[in-house]
Length: 584
Image (cartoon, rainbow, N blue to C red; front, side):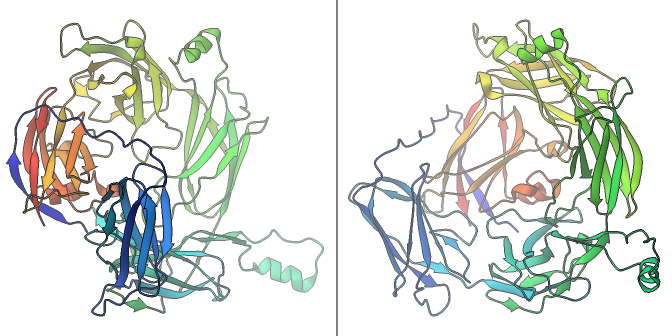
């Protein structure tokens, strides 16, 4: 899961935030500093590990050096320039580890060098990883070679299993000629084992008609058997992610015999015609065939794409069973007025069409997708200056609509420029749920609020409906940026580097993907952190040793951190310093 750290408030002085350190300028690659150390086994023997791979990377600069340990587990990097570095060790069946990290998969301590310095690192201890091994078979029990098998640690959110995003939480292996796989170096935890999609199609079992034709030798061959493919499959042999069996691995534990067979599923050919605004066939239109609900545990597969021919026909072959959105997107004929607006960055012309279809192993033909015009979203930009005389050229501002997470594939981000009078109009918007924001092209000006019918759609999603243009949106840009900063220290007053600082609104209705009121940063090597641009309001603030990016906006995930957080309030444009003491 995650580890929270208790927080003690050291100070809450409302002072101007300090300027964060500038990026270190590039210096000569060679220098006179030295880093040395050893890599040992993380067990009672503390035996030196020979031939471990040690990597030293210079932070902020493409300068990566690699060496291997000697018979005594020792390593040395010489002729190093001054700067800050990260140190990392890995070896075969062991769990890779960053120098100074509290546990595998976590960021480590930064090694800061000056010219001529010799730095002796404390031993980097690598624990032997767990192993999951078995065989992958086809539907007849024969081995499948050259297939990818994955072991994913997972979290359960609202009853749904989701892959963990932290480093080291996924292991992978390719099957050999005997279908055998071996995934090693796994940290302790619970795993779901699955195969990726195997690009191996088969005609399936012969039909009775085919067998009769083969035996009797009639002149007319029967229709070929329905084609099948091997779907992504989860141990013990199911295409249903919810039915996957959990494999629990302890420290250095080896689980063998995790054998399973790929699931053979029928595929279908889906075809039809795309017509334009005038009802005639539309050529050269892209059609995407996307699953409405893809599993968060099975490896993602590609989205089949088709392009219409001169007669508007499209074909999406080889679709496994599932609920699909067939989404088409094209461009309308360009008028002089539209071309002028496109050149000025004021519009993105597009036509769209959408049909939902349930694919269940049988071919589907004669589908019709009718293209429609995209919706227009328009409004006015208002400036809210923090001081008299503060202004900005309105034409430097950009307004952006971002679709919800999981939107249909043709609903993309739409960005448009603002006119000199503050008016904006975004054309070609595909019906979906969106959130409005600005872009950082005119820092420090950013969207303070975006009001539509009494709702702030900078925080809430609003739905764009087919055939209904949206107008009257008022986007207020402000140059009053909030700034939250401070320093994390441990119980002895020493800097607490490389922790995650999470700040999230106390309003749980805004715990949603893409929320601007949920942010996270990592503390620097001196324990400092800074978060800029939060909207005014009341927030929870906490420090964590690790986070799950994929779960960060889930209410049940954030709820875990409330008890170990402190509350802070940010006013309009307020610069607040909040130092924290952390206790593991």
